[in-house]
Image (cartoon, rainbow, N blue to C red; front, side):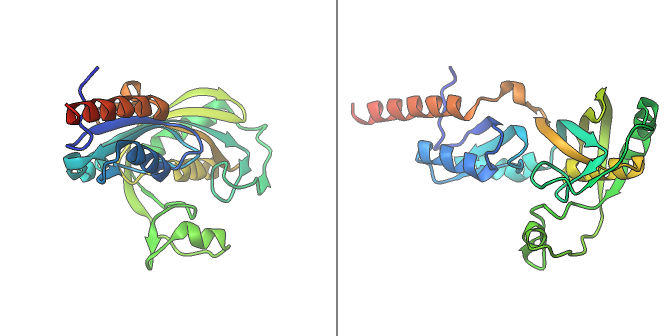
Length: 234
């Protein structure tokens, strides 16, 4: 096993479990490490799983650099229904018949969502407008104007179609909201859609295949702390 030194600085690859917040993962592992400087390089929503990168000690200086890297996701959408949050956080608020939608209709839309495009972030997101995170407005039922921003979807492929579910893989730039892509894809189909699952598989050269679960990291951290205490007591 690699010799870790979380106090000096490490890049920690976590496979974030479902329903955990990114801050919850940071809080748990920071408490186990007993290290002051721990941060994450890019939030994952609680309903998403996959690669979450934590940086400790001197490695926190690389957070901005890591956040700017290209991301890869595997996702699933359900067409013919919409939800206000565009994911599973809120209840279905509309339903549309999809019996006329074909696989050809799905594949025909891919080119217009590939490359540099303008995208409006979802209302249920953590971006700030006038110093307030927009999801706080959304939860109070308030609508605020969110300006579109340029993002880039470098690769987009449909990996499985089992109506009403469609699975896809996406490689995209920093600032891309996969929920917004799903919302817009559903609009273009004319039947609506929401994101039913999302997994981040890569950030730049970092892969979820090399990540450990929260429980596995806790074991590693406790072993590191035990070895530190043993050295200090010699």
